[in-house]
Amino acid sequence: MQAAAAASATTYRSFADATRSVLDLLERHLPPSAVFLAHLDRGQDIHRVVDTRGGAAFGLRSNQSTPLATSFCFHMADGHAPRRCNDVGAHPLYGRIARLQGGEVGAYLGVPLELSDGSKVGSLAAVARGPGHFSPEDERLLTMLGRVLAYELERETNERDLRRLNESLRGHARGMAALARIARALATAADARPDVCDAACEAAMAPVAFLLEPDGRDFVSTAMRGVEMAPVTIQARGEDRGAGRGFMGVESYFVADARNHPSLAPPLVEATSARSALFEPVVREGRVIGVLIVIWHTPVDRLDEATSSVLRLVAAQAGVAIEQAVLRARVDSLALTDGLTGLVTGRAFDDEVPRELARARRSDSPVCVGLVDLDHMGSFNLVRGEREGDRLIKEAAAAWAGALREVDLIARVDGQQFGVLLPGCGLGEACEVLDRLRGLTPRGQTASAGVARWDGAEPADMLFGRAREALAGAKAAGRDLTLPAD
Image 1 (cartoon, helix red, strand yellow):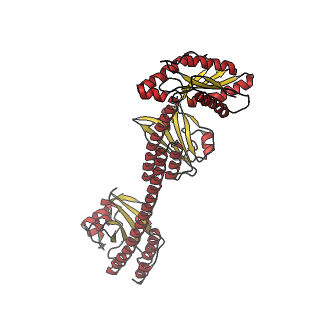
Image 2 (cartoon, one colour):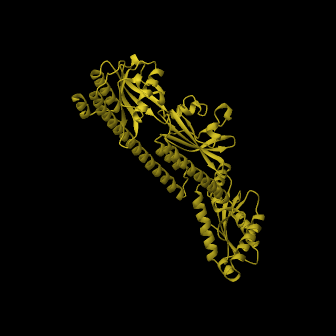
Image 3 (spheres, rainbow, N blue to C red):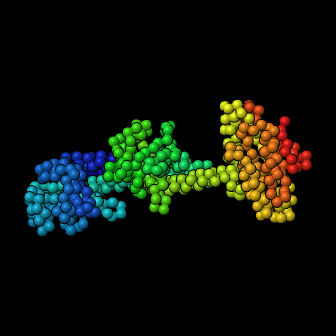
């Protein structure tokens, strides 16, 4: 009993350490019996011996599992049989179990491991061959030590649950921060796809992430984080060959060992030092529009549910980012064409002029830029309405474009103002062209123009500036004329 009291006051490193100490103590104080600790797994209907001392003589060994109904401990813990039985053979329940086990047990002593909620999850027990072996003092000893083990088990379980809870909370916090990052990016005009990769790495505590999108039969990376390399192109082969599952399925696909997996090409594994990977599909309306690949440098056996859930949310946001990028590309494409006149926009005109200047430099040929502006548009709109003003702009654009050569370019650069690019034209020829255009202005309206010839060295913005100054001069001189720049 003094030893049991000492055991109760001892601080143990773990439940396993406490189990070893208790069984060693019982081995010394209850010879020549066998002592053991068992787990009563009611969910699996299993009595499992966790550890034993002297159990070999009774066929007991660590990790040995038997059905609950054929164990002394189960019936003892549930109160169907006594804790101390010194004549097992004569007991109606214990005797039947002993006969099933070969009849080697003559005496049994056991106490349940009972937690604070009343659940009995295990047993601390001893068996002996001869009857009359265990005393009331032995039962009190086991009872005290059983309480020690129950306390240590509950303490360790609570600490483990607390660690898991803290890890889960930290994971959720990382996930919320990651999702907030994407939300901020989506709220701006910037491409949010790189932020998706950042968020995936943050949520999964992984160093590398790729976002790939379909391009024909291949998948091409449109954003990446954690590695500097050229855009990745992956051919998604058929699922029967094992490689297409990560790219064609609508469910998450985790790869614990990425080194020799068909879904990850060896060059990609080498470039990213991949050891484990997750393929998270980006699905919109039942269709895969992308795949988010998260890569770890150290092996990961499995993903916890909290991380998996956050990555699914990140993938959902990736779908929004991809659609947003597609819409932005469409808008940019539409912005190359003016919706009212069908001419190219000022942006496309600004992009084309430097290319034409480069061609003129190579061929040593002249090039001129003109600006044509409809006169008195404010008065026209005031008298006839803006709808008629739009029609005037549209008709003027059609008339002017029809009078130009195929190599010339006309664009609506701002409201009623149009830019004209005239390759191969000297200043005098360019003035004649613009005079001809002005003469085609419909509805009896007039237009003014300014034109400048490239000097062979100035940048495009300076050339535009001189043409703009010439147009301002034409307006100041009374309108309805073409004025060349100095």
